[in-house]
Image (cartoon, rainbow, N blue to C red; front, side, top):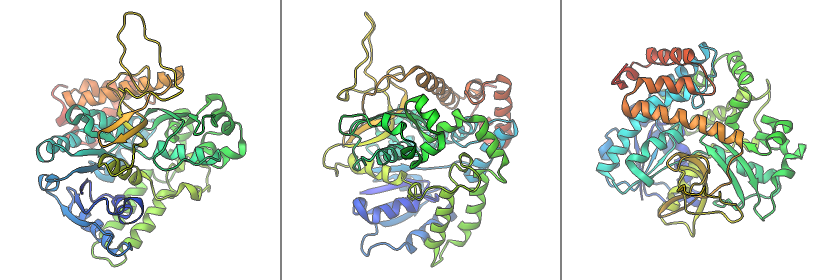
Length: 472
């Protein structure tokens, strides 16, 4: 199989390659095409792959390219992990918000909107190129903000685009392990999870029919063994009655998170930018390129969500598993290619419409005289991209029906989904008014004046944004 990675010079590409060389995904891909607009980053990552210690004879052939049409031709699967503006852009996403007293995080709140305004146009170009050069290929998207970007691409690619993130799946695995019932790979038996990307909740954990979540939430020791338990604390989790995705820390502890980021000597984006600026030039042609990259990877993962931990607190070793998104992506690819025996179950970002109920989950009673669409998350539109458990086969990813979210969860999802849709509208229609509305309406902003200042700040930093608008 021929796999193309858009953003092939990205820092995490070696994780995908390593997973393709050994373990359950070995032999799945015989040719890996790395496409990027930055040739120097491609050369650096090519050196890391060449120096990687992997079993003899297990390496897929690697081809690098800066020609998009050439890279897509004959491709069956496309992974997309691009970052328009690079890590320097991430620094700006964070800093413009922080300078206005607003949370500065690359995917959540104002920073996420700014990132999306740059990412969506480039991803739409990729999707249109796929329609020309490989119309039957699948696009597995982990370009952030993953849910929003995926929703923007559905009108172009339909079911052939699937959004992925390892955050929700990681939560489920950690919860199952803490409850004493680890789940086998590719199975989500009895798991209830609903939300949007970086905004979801694990509300049921019943692999053998009995829900283990209440017992987990009532056990201080069990919660202390997992990152989300330490992050949110037992009192809050018992009040919620569920386990939130780690990114909900930015909503539930906004002031604490913002102040913690402001107290740090540099933002997360600045730290990564500095690390990569020092790392990449020394990788090309280096015999120890892999060792250098791997040391940087470990350092990067140790700093993940550092603002949520007490000073001096280190991440638990079980949380430093070398990422995880690459395993989700490859599991999706294997299932789509028909190489899996039976359906694979994963938490993915897909449109909300569904025809696959889950045993034991009550369906919502229809209102007399009103047609109702079958949806995975009741209360959200059928065409909205949501993050839920899915069954993946060669026909695609089918979302599984979930319980209707409680009021506070559904209210927040609806609020953020409206912001996502305004952001997509801003790009697709060239509407600066929609972009202003998106910034102002976000629950982590909540001010028309702040929304205006944020958009103006990002426009000053990213001149290409002004080129989006057909009206001002």
